[in-house]
Length: 231
Length: 233
Ligand SMILES: N[C@@H](CCC(=O)N[C@@H](CS)C(=O)NCC(=O)O)C(=O)O
Ligand SMILES: N[C@@H](CCC(=O)N[C@@H](CS)C(=O)NCC(=O)O)C(=O)O
Image 1 (cartoon, each protein chain N blue to C red):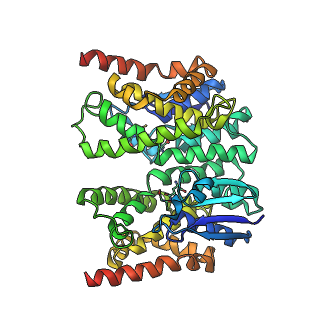
Image 2 (cartoon, each protein chain N blue to C red):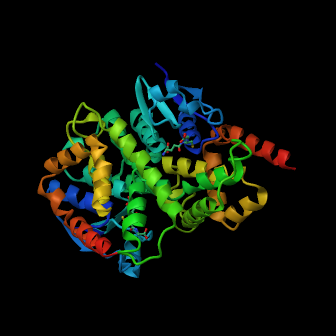
Image 3 (tube, each protein chain N blue to C red):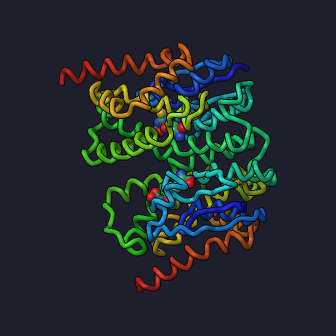
């Protein structure tokens, strides 16, 4: 049976998995699960994936959730080119460190962008509390600083100075691109003065072309609609 | 050069790595860093882990951080039984998914225990707000419920019904034991309403031998200290 990816391209980790699949010409079907309509929480969906989150994949009856796990699994199962998840244990450990660091650090971007740019306008929920925004904002800004000053270096275009992207580049990259949902002034405040991050995202888009841009069509057009409706 | 582990036994992930090393008879030295004295922010330690967090590991000049990464690395570089971190793609994905789930879910136990039990009495920091404690409590409760109802099953004693423990059992188990630092009746109430978790902790203690108890001595003594402080409040 064909591999299935369940997700919504408004979700950062779903985009990351989708890009990895496309960039490697893996045959799969995309099953759209609308987060806005709460489709990830229906009982039919929970029967497939008790976590009730996207992304997840079903590979011949085997359900895998957690984006980093899915990507590691795809690398092993399809013997993807080594740079995605290197076999050399020191390089692999570098990628694992980034993937583990992500959850309690850069992933805060998601919470911040959701509260500032989506909760009310896209998801039609009541506005968030200022303290909650601030909590996520502090962790996000610290994490972006670490990306800019430590994890991106002059050596290579990708994380930890690699010359080709790993699955961590794709996952972390898709988290940073979520900032397109912020208004321009806020986005500038968050990402301005971080030239390495800008260069890295451009390099990621270029090496995985046209997939990176295509997978970002939904979020980028949602961002444009929001901007137009706010004017 | 012998493997060096940097950490504090009040830190859940440090305990997990120390126990894993002991159970697998891997030679190492434990370098104690006091979190209360902020030794994890010293220039010497920041040279090892620029993130300034414990645990950290040094293997012959190679510096590692992030507990799940360290456990994967040890299971891959040392000769240990396959059940800790299976080579088979599907079995491995099951363990990886638990490790990935942990960070933004069960790890919230740490935030609750810290704000509710350690922040003021041990770290001498200002009181957390009521909302903060409530938020951490909800996040922790959601994760513990998922652990009880979905990750622990009737099939086998370990996570996802396995018959032998994986590195995820050790990491997640050492997080749950942090509940001992809460007022005793709160900790008991949490476990009484979750019999599978209680049973799983007992199984872990058997599987991991004396090391599990030995590396929880500091948690136990700190729990006693906290109880006596609370009784004087
Ligand atoms: N750690 C998970 C996080 C997945 C996640 O947070 N998914 C979000 C969308 S980006 C979701 O499904 N949220 C709905 C919910 O939690 O109810 C991963 O990396 O896959
Ligand atoms: N994701 C990290 C978390 C490590 C962590 O939070 N360590 C705590 C002690 S348990 C620490 O060093 N806290 C001090 C700090 O963050 O400044 C891991 O799994 O190793």
